[in-house]
Amino acid sequence: MLYEFFSTASGLSEWFCDDVNIRNGIYTFIWDGQMQQARLLKTIDNQLARYQWVDKTDGSYFEFRIQRDDLTNDISLMVTDFAESKADQESAKLLWHSQVEKLMHVIGSIF
Image (cartoon, rainbow, N blue to C red):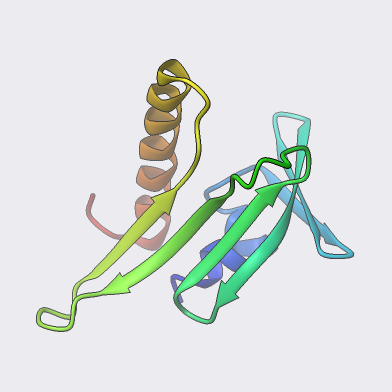
């Protein structure tokens, strides 16, 4: 169930952005009327979804990885993103914290 929130338009639009359109493998994310496009680089069912912004050619990507602890069976979400500067890194951390908090609310989990 959690994987669908990272890999489908309906799942992503519940927490990540206002709307998502997918055409020819390009995901168009919409926030407050602004659009940004990414392509899905890699998926592993129920584990990973990796995207790259179409305007980035430097090898950077953003990724959602679901990990299950073998001992406790707890689920962890690992978010990977790239930032060009320390200020961008801090801004990205705040953004992802906010977005993941929204996701936790949507799925009914405690953050």
